[in-house]
Image (cartoon, rainbow, N blue to C red; front, side, top):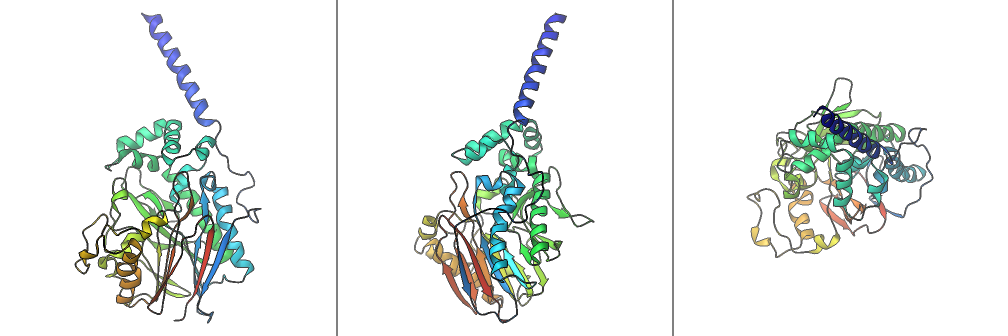
Length: 387
């Protein structure tokens, strides 16, 4: 009997050793030289400009065309973003009054950084994340057991990399903001109850609810408080993210003026503007979105929460999703809050079987311009402020 248990122990030890060897081999590694400076990187992109430079600053929406490989390492992620900053620098569009806005969830896919190389070649996000779970099995199970969310698997996936994600996200955007001397609204990232610690770094709370969180970096590279957490997550998010407090006051003092920040669907709700009315000079909204066919399709109504009282529910299935964005989001509600300039920036790229085709909405003097989808390429949109 004793020999039997010894054999079982040996078999288990061999299996565990084989698993850990497999798990830690074939992973994407960071460049030993550290963060890139002038990377050799080429991408298709277009440049759009609105308004005239009056010396009062500008909002610059960057829609980098991102792929799974862009997230294989923090180095590659920075390279993918730096290309667009370099274009702006060459054209003298960046200054200390520049506000650069990135799309929603742009930091979230750092969950895939430094994973097994095979996941970046998978055809679907489901297959990629399954491989990731298998190669991080024990950390995944720990997060799964601690999960306070309905969708325990998705929560566990983001929880297992949260600390590293937060560090890489801050390193990349802090570096870019400091080097290019601009303010960056760094899209958003899914993190467990993130906060800013005493030395100015992002920190996460193990086992806490995940919030879709946006971080603003000043032109010295430091994080500007407060962190913005999404108040009205849509149905697809509610399984793994939580709703933040609607009492947030996401207004920031910048060299270009007072800036309000709302994350995607939050811009559809009057409650989100209650602490913004007459307090901001301009507003920026990072969004995700999907294929442009969704934008053109019939609007199905509010997603995740009950429609506000001022919404005409007879519009459901009568107007398009795009028309609903114009009627019920930033473009209408910001003006009601006496905010007359702003930009809504959507994600674009090809991440596994996700093919977001981002548009950009520009609010200028109460009038809204909607740019066509960015398909197969990145885009830079510059709005010169006039107040």
